[in-house]
Image (cartoon, rainbow, N blue to C red; front, side, top):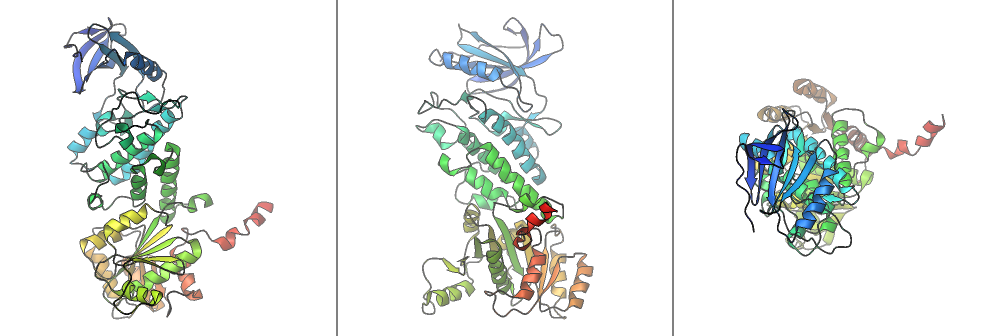
Length: 496
């Protein structure tokens, strides 16, 4: 392999571009800032790479393809030329002011604000969708923090097309196997040809990198313990699906991922009382309801069962998860359902009651796995424990439910819990008081300055439907589950 030229300050490349300084280097390539001798004051980025004779024709073809691209999140590739004696090739492109995403993460100790992660993902997906829908499709193949520039306006731009290629349907595999370990899809090192789904895998790796403070880019055992607790819960199943080992198990297009993230954003807007259209309510992802008891015996498990069967009747595909390894309630219930003797529960931790999938004595890692499945809702029975793991799941949930005694002398227990956790945002919390009086609900709403406080009526059998309980839960989950009773007659409104 021939070596790169010893370019330095003042060197002139292509009889037009004077080298000003080095911007970066890695492997067999370097990037320089250069001034344009024909356009005074204009600055460019010049990338110098080595291309052996066996791939030079491919490099020329890909350079022509890159020059034809035009997108606001891509630098313009304006020139390409070769230096045959050295084997070097040069791409001249827009100089982007800013820092790489990797440098940003290091400067902020691996932290990017949680409210910026979904918009960032949508920006990257926007440019991937543009590339993948070209004819022929363009596969980027090296999506990673060092190849993303963050501008002073917090815009993200892809800056390195060193190994991008056109997808060729007639090929069984790539001519050259390249990519960055940890961010490249498995097929980039195997016998297959990379396609749009390979870039989507890299996006998943990039999002996991951001969500774990730069610690992980591959889904390995224990990674869920490093995912930041305040992040939007709907990101986890999206990332998990993007990182599937087999391309056919991932999202199949950037547009599909964009649709999933936007539906999630619409759902969150609905929770905050923002008006959205009916279509956005028909959310296709998994939502998490976490039920936490203020104290032992407050009714958390009873309420979790009631909520699960209510949701199953309304929307189907519901899992109820017992999130503590020493709990016994679900084991006893499974013995009744399966007709086994006391202490003889099945080795399977999953059983079903009236369409609800019960998961007994479940770990947090199992919950992460279930989020990547097909459940519309996952209800977490957290019991009354407030250890770090269960508290974190409660805080991350889409619908956190606090269950406390409705007795007059115990209502203050809920206010005490809210005060003890006041450093955490509580706008999503819902408070449920079994058998509470309307006066107790009114006082607690005033004390908490929160209107999501509900009295739960007497309901002896949580598996059965009860009109009074359904009315309360209809109010609690308003805007989340489409009201089929009203939608059934929607055509009448159109005829008026």
